[in-house]
Length: 402
Image 1 (spheres, one colour):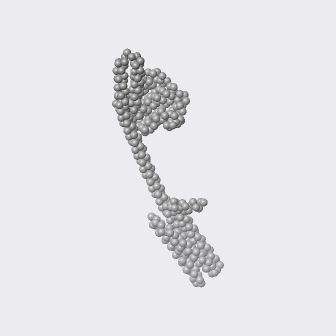
Image 2: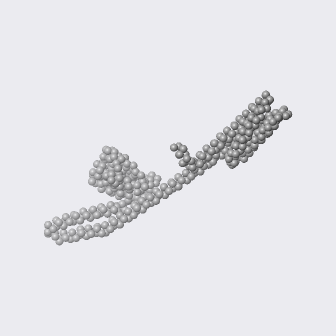
Image 3: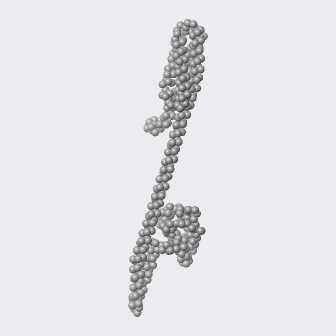
């Protein structure tokens, strides 16, 4: 299963594969160099046998060991890593030169050993010892060049990895910036769409309110005038006059309901007095009834808000007041306005029976008044928090940017 996984995913990890190849080549390089040292060491032991006991039959074995060492040198030469670009050319030259010197010493030793009958043995022996000594010194240089070579290649690879990580990190930062800008643009367009929708809604409400006032309102007013004329004509007829009085009451009730509907569509009181004064007038009328006392307070409220926002806040306050009147069983409620920097805050509280703040406020949840308030707050791009509980009253904080 794991083998299948790696086979299917190796193409995703080219850097990882390259790292494995690099490690493998370096291990082989060190292994070959150690094997060269071992083969040369074996050949030297066999020659020591000759020097000690004058056994000339060991030359074939010596040549065999030296040939293996030479083959290992050729194997190292065949490494593709020799062709790898390293910025420090001196390290590459030292590596190649020391490897060539080792090969030269080995070939020279093979020539000396291959003489067969060793005439002038003392001269041959001294040359062999000299070559072994030179080979040993060269091999020390070679080992150092291997260390420098491997270290430099690893350093170059780490530099490439670091550069790659920097590029990936930069790319991720760029993507994050682009995503943030796209999200901000999306929210801006959505906000503009909501504001435009609210503006169109308010204009349509005004148009409908004007049509009702000019059309149905005028008709009801005319009906009221005709009823008054009929009352004068049938002043002596009590039976007819009673019916006309009932019709007049119904007409007045219809006219009053129409005015309420028109005011709900387009709050004329808001257009005339502004947000704070309009709410003070409404609260004053509620206080005259005497069941609940409403306080309204504005702490140096001087924020400049648009007409659409003002109407939305006015409707939010109406929703909260209606909820208190219908459901809270409270005897006191408070509306507080204040602004800080570019934020407007509305705090509403009452001392009623409260409710479960985790209740579902969706349109089907049963709390349509609170649901409407939340949707209006969201239409302004604002935020809200609701603190309540059974017997703990209600405390609602709404905030939005000017």
